[in-house]
Length: 79
Image 1: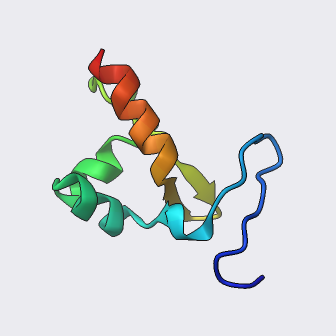
Image 2: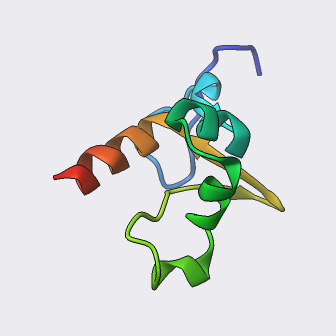
């Protein structure tokens, strides 16, 4: 796949730009929060304790985040 080429997730309608996929540390940097905060907001046990659960992509043992999905999630939880 060429850099900048879009691909589609199996259940997604919108094309995903590979540049929009972030690692936990990249997401933490953009949100200006600790990486531990990002990980905590993706754990199932945090659902009962946290108001904010982050949408994530699980690729084997790796977590990745779609920046457009995170932005939508922030907009929806802020209102």
